[in-house]
Length: 476
Image 1 (tube, rainbow, N blue to C red):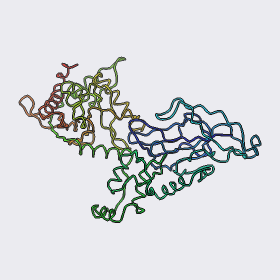
Image 2: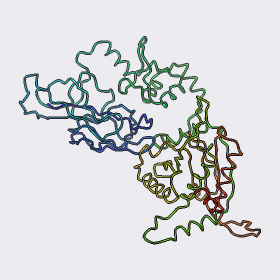
Image 3: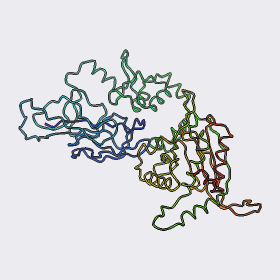
Image 4: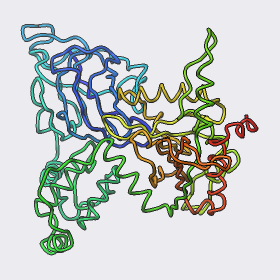
C-alpha cells in the first residue's frame, strides 16, 4: 500500500507568512523525486521554487495559480511507497495489511520541514489498491484542492457531533456562540482588514490549516453579513465611493513596497537635505581606473560602485546614520556593520538587494557584488536573505533621467542617499564659468537619530569626495 503524505507550504524565512502561487511545476499523476521543485511561488521578497521533501506520485494540488496561501497551508499530497493497481490482490479482501516502512524525509530543503521522518499517520487499507488519498486520523485542511485523483472523504470516521457542528460553523465563517479559544491569525494584513471593518476575529473559524484565519475568511464574513447592519452602515458612511476603473491587487512585490513605504511615512519623522556637486573629477577618476588593462585588470568600476564606496567612508565618519530605532525600548541602535542596499528596478517592481559588509570591500568588490545582485534581481532569483537586513540604502534615480527626488527611507533604516543624473551644466570652477558634470545629491534621514548638523556633515563629505576623489584616499 502507498501512504499519502501532505506537503504544506514551508516557512520561507525572514518572517514571511504567505506566498502567491505563480506556476505549478508538476501535474496530478506526475512522479516526483525527493527535493524536486514542485511549485514556483512569489513572496514579498522574491520568487522561490519550493522543493518537495517526499518522493512519489502527486495525488492532489491545493490552490490555483495566482492564489495566496499562508505558511502551513497544504500545497499538495504525494503517494509514497508501493502503489498497487486495481487488479492487485496483495492486500485485497483482507481489510488489513502490513504497513509500509515510514519513508525518510528530505535533506536539503527550506525552513520549517525537512530532514526528519514524516509524522506517523493511521491509514485505512484499501483492498482495491490506491485510488485516492488514504484516509488519515485527522482531516486534511479545508482548503479545497484544484485537482485530485479522487476526493478526500468529507466526513472523518469517528468524528463527534461537536466537531461536525464546528465544521458547519467554519463553512459560514462564523463561530457559534460560546466557542472559546485563541484567535488563530498569522498575517498582520488580516488583522488590519478586520480592524477596518470592526470585525471580531474571535467570532470566526478559519479555513486554513488548524483553523488559521485567512484573508478570504474575513472578506467572506464581511460580505455574508457577519458584520451587523449597524457596523456595515458605519463602514459605508466612512468609506468614500470606490472609483470605477481597472483594479490592480496590491500583493507580491508591489504589496510589500506599498506596506514598507507606508510604514516608513507613518513611523519615521524624516527630513531631506540636498546639494549640487561637481562630478567632473569623479568621472575622470573612473575613466582612469577603467583604462588600466592587462591580465590583472578587474571588471569595469561603475559610478554606482564609487558612490557606494564613498557612502561607506561617510558612514564611518557619521555612524549615527547607520542605525535603527527601537521604538519600544526608546533606544537608538548603532549597527557595527554596513549592509548597503541599492534600489533596482525590475519587471516585477522595485527591489532593494543588499551588499553585505560593504565597509570591508573596495570599489571593485562592491561593484562586482552589485552586478551579481542586479542580475539576480532581473531574473527573479534573489534569495529572501539577499533582500533584507540592509542598514543604509543608495538610490540612483538618475538612470531615469531625473535630477532630484526626496527619497522615502527604507524602514527600519535611518537614512537613504539619492543620486540624480550627471549632466553638463554651467558651473563656476576656479573663479571662471565653465561647463562641468554636475549631480544633485539628496539625503533623507530619520530626525530621531540625528539633527541637521550631522546629516549636513554626512552629505557635505559625500559631495567633497565626488568633487575631489583624492579626499577619499585618506580613509582607504
